Length: 450
Image (cartoon, rainbow, N blue to C red; front, side, top):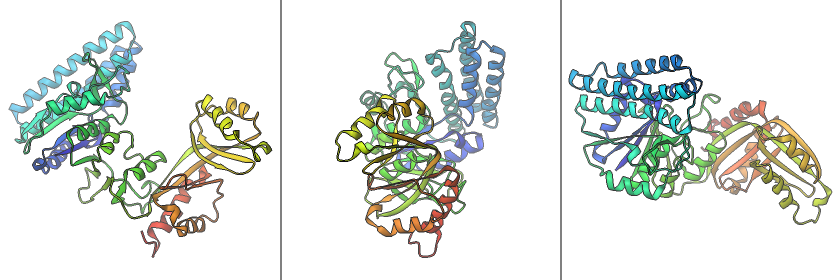
C-alpha cells in the first residue's frame, strides 16, 4: 500500500482537488491512504479567528469565518446536485459548530490552548469533507476517516506528542487498506485518550502521513507539494537548481537543518524508523519524477547545498587551553546553562569558535564565557553547507570549493564531524553569491561529474 500526503497549496481549490484525486486514482491498485492538510490559507485564517476571539472581537472573527465558509462552499458548488447538497450541509454544520465555539471564547475573552486546537482542527475536517464529496461526485470508491479516532496524543495542546504504540495499534485495527478504494484522513490533528482534539504543530500533516505509513507498513510515502522535490539549491537563489533524484535519510536531514525546508526530518521520522521510502513530488508538475529519500546505500559525492543566515560566531581565546583537560567541558556547560544550541565547532590549541543562532541571548552568554578567556562575537554571518556522502574521502571536492570561493572570506570550516556535510561560516551578505558560485562549480560546469 501507499500513503499520499497533500499540502494546503495542493487542495486550495476544487480544480486542484481534482488534480490530486487524479493522482490518487492512479494509485488505487496500491490501496492508497490520502492524508490532507487544510485548504490553502485556511489554517492562517483560523489562527486569526482564535486571536480575535481571545481579544473579544467577535465581529472580526465572524467576518473571517464567513469568508472561509464561502470559500469552502464555493469548492462544492460545481458538484452534481445529489453530492453538492450533502457537502454544503456538512460545511454549514461545521461552521455552525465553529461559530458557537468562537462565541464562547469571545464571552470570556480567552482562547485556551485546548480551544485553539479545536478551532484549528476545522481546517482539515472541512478540506477532507470537500475531498470526500468530490470523490462521491466523480464515482471514486472512498472512505472518510477521522484522524481524531486514530492519532492518539498527550495533552500538550498546540504541539501534542503522538503516543506511537497506541496510535499504531488503533490504525492497524481500524484501517484496512483496500485496493480500488481511497482512504482519506486529516493531517495535523489527533486527540487525547479522553477524546479531546489536539494539533501536532506546523508540519503536522507530514508527520501524520509518516505515522500512517509506518503503522501500515507502506511500501512508499509520497509527499506532494508545490516544488519539484528536494533541489540541488534554493531555486529562488540559483536559477539552475534541479531536483535531486535520490538521497539518503541522513542527507535529507542535513539539508533540512541547514535551510532546505521541503521536508523536515522530524516530521518523517516514523517512516525513517520503519525504512519506508519517501518520495517528494510536485502536484503541478507531473513530468518531474521528484526526489526519493531512502535508506539504501548511494554513491558518494555532493548531492546538494543549502544555506541559512541569522547566525553569529562566538570565539573564546585562552592560553589556559594549552595542555589542559576539562576546558571544553566547562565551556560547553556554559552554553548548556544558557540553553544555547550549538551548530558548528572548530578548535585550536588556544581558541574555540562556535556558531549559534542569532536569536540567542548573547550578552549574558558573553559575560560568563569571559571568565574562561577573551570573547569575540562576529555578527551577521551565515552557514553554507554542502551535503553528500563521504565528502571527506574526496580531497578534490574541498579543492574545488575553495577554488570557487577565492574572494569569499571564510571564518570557520567543518568537515569530518559529519560524514555527509562540509559546512562553511561566511558573511551573511555573501551567502547567495557563494551558493551560485558553488552550484556552478559542482553541478553546472562542464566536467563537474554531477
